[in-house]
Image (spheres, rainbow over the protein chains, first blue to last red):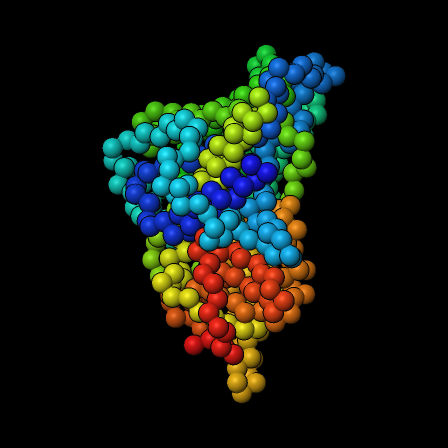
Length: 293
Length: 143
């Protein structure tokens, strides 16, 4: 009860701030994938997850199968007599709004661009509502879509599933030793060309041929067609240590690395509802929020 | 120990909410709607589009002459309803409601951001969070 009340009360305050926040300042907050704090929430649901035994497949490799993230939902909740409310309505305690801010996960590192591209990032950030494809129901793509939300693994391939607000996405990652495609005419795609291999107990996924219309993350963090992404996944008990490095020597001054600890969830990954861009044409300005990916 | 865990969960939930909400409210409401003006409508929900990035509720509003105008009202993302018990069917099967909303800034007629649906028997669906004001006495139509 204590948990629910706190959640709902602060939900109302947060929603008010989130919906009404003015234009975010350039570089105000870096976001990658689903909110970093949601992984903290999921870890707290299973506090001893990392101490569980690490399961292995018949071929001896760690078993990465499972749901590793899901949206927690329940932001709308019953308030009695058949009524429902988002947050705590007008009854949010004033002390919450004026109190100290809640602790947040340690901020992610910010990608460092070559000086000649800083203005381009600013332009995209200033015009994000228009320029960001992910705000218009298009797949944010790799790496912006974040760590896998569910993994299906066999001896020869891993399939990463994502219930994204732009729709349901998946990646099929061969583990049979093949290299990247060699067709020079092959189109770049949102999820790119992924191949995987095992480095000891770590699954390493190498991704090339990524669509340069997509961004690394929120706030105008664009990339070139030469982006090269490497993901490393190591299972520890019922957790996965996930690390993503984006290397784009054309526009970045140095590779950009993000880490997350994923916790095995008992819930089913629910498919996302279809995405329909009904807002197009109704914007009167470029006001937007930090978007979590 | 139990209390500590609850506190931890509450803190984590707060942190998650603080960053999750902007994720899905991806453009500012103020980029599209006039949050300085609340309109009140009286009508029946005739259609619900359960889609990302926000659901849309269509409200049939009858004016004094009997002419029906269908308002298109943007609301919150479908994932906000997960596990809540408030479903598309509940929204569709309700009686006539008194509805508050922010109007569109670009002048589009019959287009707004939904705050609250209130029904004659007293039950309500407040989807505007802390932003939803109490509905003033309802006229028969907007404006």
